[in-house]
Length: 364
Ligand SMILES: [Zn+2]
Image (tube, rainbow, N blue to C red; front, top):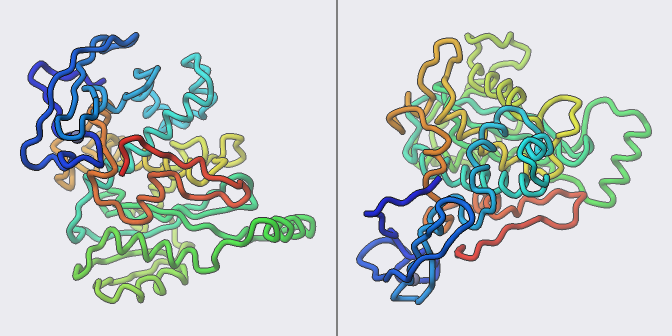
């Protein structure tokens, strides 16, 4: 929980539209009394920005701003990577399922910004592995790939989504149902994987950089790389029929797939906790990636450091409360188009008419 010390002062104006919001140069504010809260911290210092006259408080800078159940965030993070479903968590804490869902979404947004802020922004210093983790949203008629770019250190550099058409052996009745659903809601773009992989690699590998990427023999991957001529990509493929041992060049991706399925209730086989919206799966993937990169050992048996420590991005393993120590504001970070759409919940689910898109009072 965010408990500002006596010497704490607000670092910038939280109003995105204010001249003083950048946090550079002096900005002037004044204290404006306190307000009482029912939950700790019970007495909260209020402020007013002298430039835009907006009121705010020390809580504005906490990940628990406006929350009625501020103590839920940290245990929720653990349960969401401990394979609990939302209703199971709600029963444990005596809350409505919708409260847990809203806090999971907040956690997902926070983790997206956290991952983007901490990831290496230069050329990756290690070979990468690219993989598509197959899951589905809403029903098995709407599969999608979670494309993952992972280092040999097991650090998750980034991920995104690609809608897919349901394939495999279908009964005539299933084929007819697919045709009816596609007529009603449209079909995923046939080049969705190529487009998504292009976005992911362009985001993680800066122009001018050179990188080795291992992957399976998916035909869309070389097509995506060919569209990124300003990056030197050395691509090595391994058949997905090769045995999935630690010696397999795709081991980091194979292990990530296992861990995602092991840790996330929404990706279990034959579950009722599957993602109803792709957006929810992406928020949950962000939470999983923060846990994988900053909290979980690379090897459970050795209890060694998490990947982010091995890469020198943080000094030691982080605790949930450290990850949640400070609220992150989307307008203070450069977000590319995909991250921005994902953050503001604009990733659609075809059979559902509307996104539950998210707006923030202080968002630009
Ligand atoms: Zn201001």
